[in-house]
Image (spheres, rainbow, N blue to C red):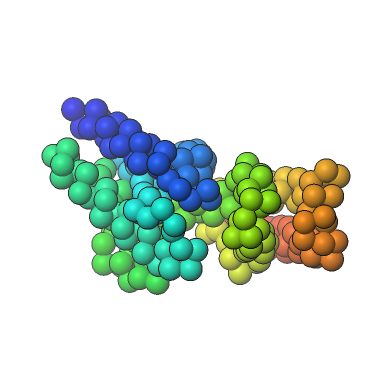
Length: 245
């Protein structure tokens, strides 16, 4: 019975995210995050309940962004996780589903929130379960390097200056070392693979030419150089951290 109700919660999240007006945080993004969460959870050999909670949290982690047709890139990151957790909590009450899995999933999203997440992690999550917060954050971070996600924005750039600005912001954010960080070893390995593919994608002749035409050769070359430096830096950093374990 609980499995059926958890499946209902997943279907509800899918329905909600299908209506998302945010081209960066839509159902496709959530599906990719769920895939990364599944992959990372298996690599970390989570218990069955932990894995189910992680996947459920991944499905719901951006539900809060659907409450407005124009989610702010500046304001929403401070509130979307809290709103998403409350939406999941409300839905679990409606379904009359209580227990370890939905409880962990809801708390995980609360603890992922920007600003208050660290405090909430100590209050709401047991020490042995805090790794799940890192896994959820890592899965979300990995999708920053999704070529599909960038291509989706890439196709919208010509339609509005807002999308043009948003695309440049996403690329800058993605290739900034202080933003592109993950905590788990499984995610670090995957991050290097995705970053290498991402840089190679921008360097493809057709994609490179489009960036030069749209944003200028100087900016485009700078982003490629940033990506290559970041790849080298992260490779060395991750290799060092692994050697210490």
